[in-house]
Length: 238
Length: 293
Image (cartoon, rainbow over all chains, first blue to last red):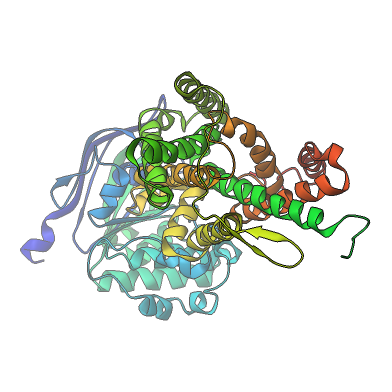
């Protein structure tokens, strides 16, 4: 691996986060290198989504450190985090009902050069082009997920935070999303992926972290998944 | 001369014009309220006072600085919008996470203070403001004063211009999206707090603009806003809270209905809007163009 690629692109350590009085993250530590696809695995309530939202600045009360390209993110409001080149695709997809498909696609502003063009995104997701004038929330679940991913590809963000992009989708759509994630990796994007489905995660990721009770309790390279399959089953309760 | 249902046409069209002019102000004011409520979730009770301030700033510009109506049309809304921005930055901003009721109480209180200060300084009798566009046209069936015709046309242009910006442009898509989910819009890199401040300033500026346009028609008085704002709130409820098109259609429509009522059944002209409001609330509680939230 070349020297530059081994430098931590996103480095999270001792991350604590609270929703009101409830203490959700208890010192999470992990890192992502440039160009990697890394997953956060874990049961419901382990703190995976909160971790993404804390990096993004959506959870207000946080301590610890989260550095992106060496810059501290904690303390920045979420619009400034986004401007550094981080894009977030929420679990609930966040498609806007009062916007049509194309308006949804064009909503996130460009934060860096080098993002995909609208035509490239339509090539990746031809369904979206056919339905560009439909109300955003009239799309099927799979199409909404494609729109949610597609709209952050235009921005030029280099680190994508994807929260359970395959949740509740048909197997053929899950395959499509896997294919898209591999294509984005080939384009040099760095992806932090939250998943409950480690069989899907194993088809796209380089490394996996396992979270439980707001901490990272274990990690594997993707080629170690098979040898650790029993442990993973136990962690994830599947 | 022909007659319509026993009403002379001068009376009918005269009241129709009066209705359209009132409707022009209802529409401008309820539009500002709708824009503010949509994004801020605040029922802006200062709106009437801000309309009054618009008229007074125009009056002060004329009487204290010799600046006439046309420049005032631009200057007064900007001045009043800046006071609105200060209020939003210092006070309103602290209430967004609380119930609607807190914003309502705060803005209501500020409205009373502002009106009180103006009454203290100017008394409650009105000040005249000269018509900047005297003269008129005889249309055959009625006489149309130039300035009043201009007010109706200008209000329509401003209303549909605002509708176009919000519904058909990129900036408008930010506004609509931030109305639905401000957290996510902010996480895309848009400075939502600044957008909220500017939106409030814009809504306040609209109220002040209506005030400047009203100055030559009505008297410039500290109470001109509170007399109007009660009707405007009924218009907003009928059109649907936060609906842009609803406030435009309901504003003009109710102005005309009110005018016609003055012709056909004058006794009801002060209450007809509230009767319509009650009926609309019974049949469609979210208003004619509103969506339940």
